[in-house]
Image (cartoon, rainbow, N blue to C red; front, side, top):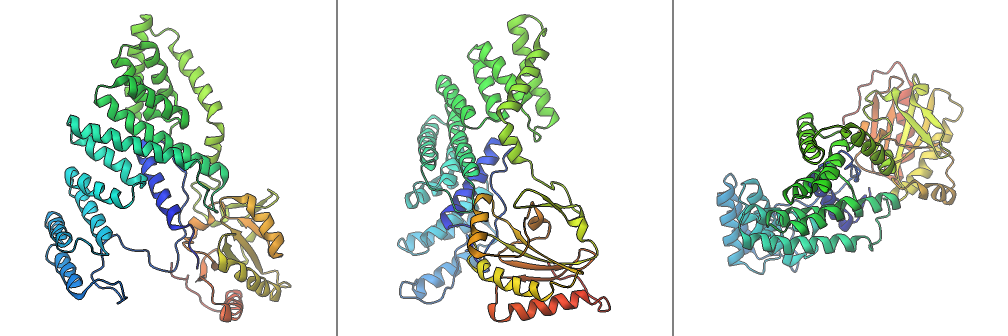
Length: 459
């Protein structure tokens, strides 16, 4: 099996998820579910024993780390202290970053912002551009609620902004469309300015806070940023700006905004409006006009955020799409055995598996009781037609439209066989070239045999 993205891409998408949490909007659907590799992902916790290599830790170091982990595993503060003592004893350990990340995670979980901040600063010495560390460190320092920490927070927020601005010049990962990559860049930029704006506001630098909030809104508008802008403008006595910002926050098409929050926004907007005009006459017209304006300006973003088959849990209610845009209704396959090969253009083993899949398909081409579908999961669909021309596949190709999530496809390539009732009766992850054709042919024949009692494959 092959990995979905490079390590750098994975780290960036993790940072994007942090941005989504900070901005808190319902349109934060910028990163799709990862298809992991067959190999185990590296643990964030340091491993006490590893295979011996020329650069491997000494036996003494391994034993010391094992002891540090064993004696304090159930006490976060004790574990932090033990790991810090380990680093003091072995300052040049090859596991230094792993140990620091464990201390950092434990400090966060133990609600110890000072320890977490101090450790994050050490980690940034190893990776100065880590956007997730930068954004979290700003929050940790801000929570310490003293002028010196806030000045440091502003410095790190400025570095976060520089990282976000640089993102626009970086090449996109191969499995993300240009539009999605641009959205991710805008999202990170908006988050970075929002983060710094909040610290500026708490530091009394409200003019700079307003500038950052407006830059954030210009990059990627969200209701929370608009509300903060309104609050700061109201604090400065800038009633017109406050009304404008509150109207944006209140009218924003954000499904995640709970009724209590929207009610509070309504009160803020009403209060500012009455202070300006002595009544609420005309306020409804303003809200409707702002809603229409937002729907026009966010049209492409809202369209991107809406997922086909969203909320559908019945396989036979799914509607897929061919390359030409025509629909494929899985309801039309009810009563048939369906063989699905989930693949992507960036998946190396998928190329060979596609050829072998077609051999099996050819063996059953005269049997109307079985159907074969090559289900593509690429986010950037623009690369798919050229790939198919190059590979000369003949199997029917459809886009997944969320089917991979419904059927818990976690890695590529994956082959599934569904029985006539839509139950998964066979699942194969990865490619075994020598046995693929024989195994799949056998499993299809078994699925076609109604007399054989079958249990759904384990998930």
